Image (cartoon, rainbow, N blue to C red):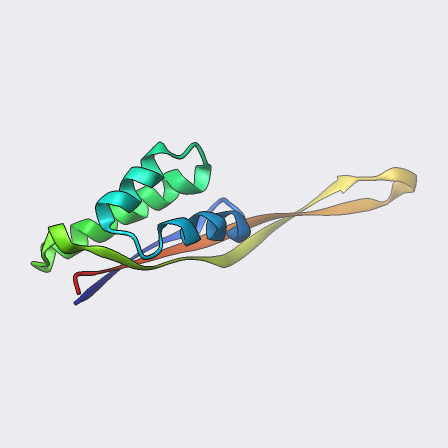
Length: 109
């Protein structure tokens, strides 16, 4: 059985989120949470929140919490906030503030 947790509109670039999601994929829930809580990265703290939410959903569905594994962890791109900063000779430079949607799938197989 699988459970899925999604954290949407996270103010971090998807590339930074994907770097960390590759680290926790395939690990047990306890190992993934330990890595996420000990890592100094912003993406780690946000993935820890999503992992805890997925575990709560698994407990509600009656899954065995000791055998939970992270099947997939993904940081998909979300919308962008578009801002402009003044540049030389009266031009404007575009600044894209990216958002992500974090998805974690836990399985007990």
